[in-house]
Length: 201
Image (cartoon, rainbow, N blue to C red; front, side, top):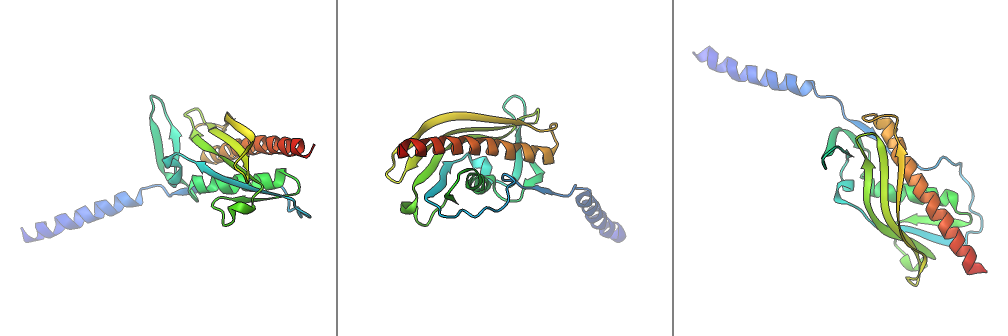
């Protein structure tokens, strides 16, 4: 009886250890900015700030979130972002705009000198994830204001989509989500440059 009592806990520990060893490794992914080489801004005359952008709470987690059917949300513990998505959005959009807008320096929220900005991208993201079919979606309401809080690009609602190779392909999903941020960045750059051009006429 004494031997039996000692063998049972040992068996449970062994089973627990075996179960832990069978878990798949965690994979990490990152969002990517536009691929452009370093360009000297020269004599910059525009100072652009990206943010603040209000984001859903689920974008602050590290796990990749996708949407299933019947309002189901899937949180994957084994496929994660290397940084919170809400932080990555500021970084990626800032880098994209820095590449797309000539003669400008772009900084990401939070700022240390808000009063020094000429223009500021503000808005609210209602969705940034992928559906069951692998389609990445960015839904956002955004506008651009001046240092005097006047809109030079009036608030608008927009939806951007990019299709991943297939559902469950996380490298392709990360690329698709990077692509919708690029689409958004191009839209902001074009609208802002048009507004600046009108102001200079």
